[in-house]
Length: 128
Image (tube, rainbow, N blue to C red; front, side, top):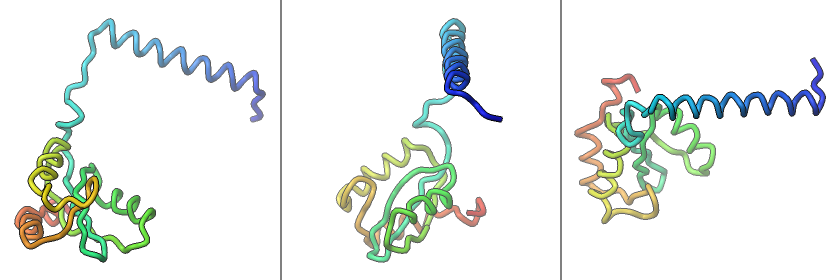
């Protein structure tokens, strides 16, 4: 099926109209999500590079996140642990280990951090 510029523009305008109608309906119904993004359950993952540095992040799917990070890294990355939790929990762990922070979500490895991960790792429990 071939689309002309006019037809594509018409389809785009109809889609935008439906999106706006949906937004208006949510406003009328006073729709609010049932959870805050920061409270959504998932996994805090710990990914280590060959230098030993550890990324503390959050994802619904740690293995998929590992694949994405691996694509952008020249180092081989390893998923060394996961903890069930929320984005709020992830931020809490960033604060706990702030003395080890290198940059953003990357932290130097030390015995306390590695022991923390080992004691809480739930990969087997969740088949990760």
